[in-house]
Image (cartoon, rainbow, N blue to C red; front, side, top):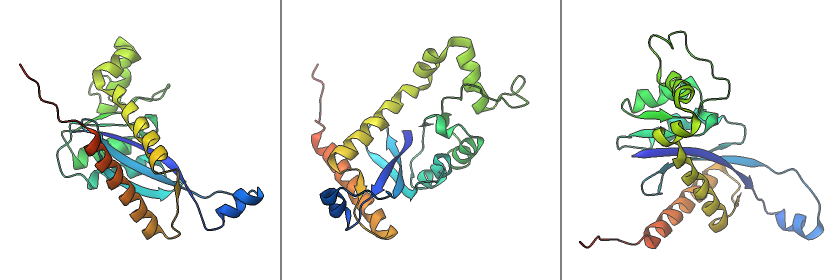
Length: 196
């Protein structure tokens, strides 16, 4: 399985939100971050965590991978995950999985990049050799668009806010939303059979 990882902000909505809409007053919004792991082949959400808004995206790779039992072929994420801790978390839990993260515009290679490049060193080297577009096609980085499509579907179907006031209830709300979206995906996908 190829795991696509990303996060989005979800606002907290409270009982006084209708007053804000009615009277037009402004108040400071509170946010949480929804981190998900999406199966690239099926589009199903296989892992999710809900954190405070200031939590680093890369720190949630471990908790997402802990929710996955089947072997991974690759973990694909955006540039926010270009950290050595991400590579370490993936290799400790799924040693066979490749990590596909676009490097920053000014990547710092390891001291052994010329003689023994790390997996993180190989991405800038491949981009330098063949260009970014060739690297994206060869590595599967283009699949990240599926996560953005998921977040669009999530916010159109479920909404961009959490209604409950405690963390346990918010996590339950996220779990139910993911079950609903996975079920909708299952119902909407046709069973195709090729006739020769």
